[in-house]
Length: 183
Image (cartoon, rainbow, N blue to C red; front, side, top):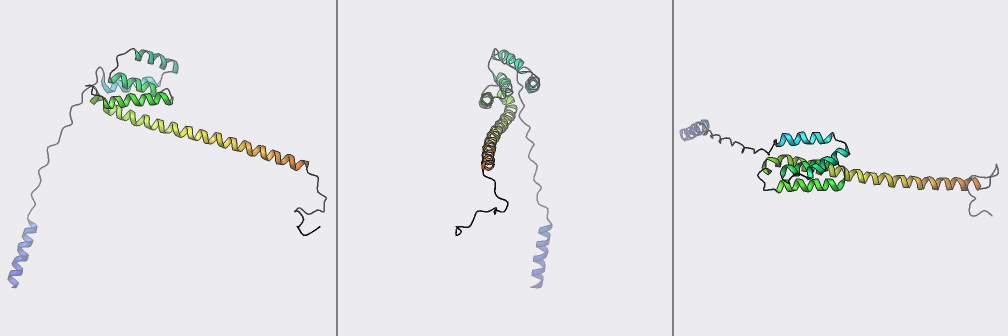
């Protein structure tokens, strides 16, 4: 009986020492080749955005007029959305987001190359909109707080005026009103 147990333990130990088959690594998938936007690609769009940031409002208006004369395509939509986002107008930011959504849903051959930039811009515009809404809400709260402060100041001034018109107390009079039971 002892030998059977000893043999079983030895077999179990030898089985545990056996090496498991090493899985062969899957071949690394190469990313799909990125198509380039016509002419200049993403780098040109990023440079365009940087250039737009340095323009004055009048120059931005001229650039919008020039941009509107170009044919509509993915590159046009990205440029126009970048330009609209710099106006700091809520309606223009909504239009910029709509243009970016159009790029994300586009079947244009240049759209796959533009999608990463469009996704980044969409996230950026959503954050801008959230911050704008927060700033508007805080501005409203400040206005309301200022209005309440002004009302309280007016009430305080009215109370001071009433206090000045009250007759002066005699020196020995108590500071508190008389008790109800006294005549």
